[in-house]
Image (cartoon, rainbow, N blue to C red; front, side, top):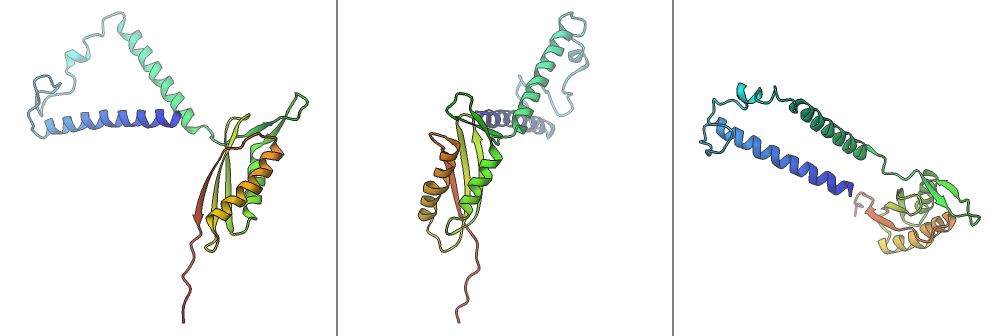
Length: 192
């Protein structure tokens, strides 16, 4: 959801800035604006002195300005912390059967899964990242395959061996996984 909010927010702000900037540039270059536009011509100011000081003496003006700015600052801080938040899962809850449970470090499971996936036939390098919630983790696996390996074979080995072992050792009923396969670059062989 955060990704969608982020994209929509950036898109709306970008469109507003582009429309205002383009309109101001067009008026500044001499285009005649419509009658309802805020500028009358290229030598007109954005806000006149009367417009800037219009509400200054009203009792409600400054509290409203401060409240709106405070809300904008809080929204900007929320957005910044949400964007900078770690998307990597720090720990997983493991059901031990006694009701207490245990915690498994996310990096330990990532490392074990990457090591086992890296030992599969035809896998040059494996990278694993845990995402999701502590009680329902998900994995993102990136495999760099050697040129001779069949991607279907590598994927089958990953799901039946490495992911099955990780799911079983963590006591998870399911471990949804997104796998990205990439072929390793290699030089062409010389033919003599």
